[in-house]
Length: 95
Ligand SMILES: [Zn+2]
Image 1 (cartoon, rainbow, N blue to C red):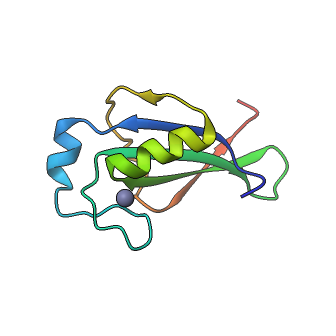
Image 2: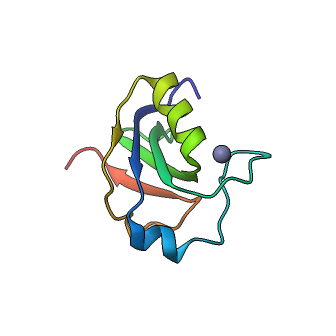
């Protein structure tokens, strides 16, 4: 966690919410409906490489994440189709 950075929170679009209405908040022991996505970057150990993790969370945990990391809750935007939930995507910082 200490290497994590690039924290961000945004609302899900209505379309993304409807498509995942069956999904629960990814916070342990929370069964809230997902309303927001939280993302953060972390170093993978490879020079110049970082991974982006995303979690879908309820409104309560989105607010806590934003408050804890002191970031604003951003307006709805579509989540990237190329990234699977709960997985990481490699990006190259040299671009
Ligand atoms: Zn939750």
